Image (cartoon, rainbow, N blue to C red; front, side, top):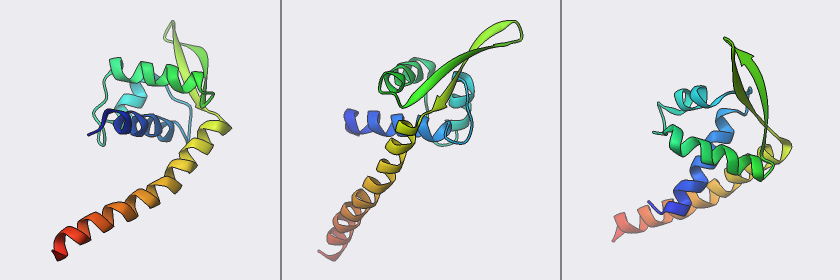
Length: 105
């Protein structure tokens, strides 16, 4: 798979993982695990990139005596997720064209 395409898809997957409620790194990995293999070394750069793009915000809270970073999707992050869903329809149409063309020939 194209590296840039995969990178963009992982960004959107992370946004989707925290869309309903704030979450932290380990939980995000766990939530995505049935669908996407994601390591900490891949996740944390994604989180920093999304924070820099104002797609998520971060707050720290104490948990069992340690600080844990919780990530929250911002309005810009929700907009990016919505735009992906719109773009996906176009990609699906392209996919369908390619698959159907290959079957008929």
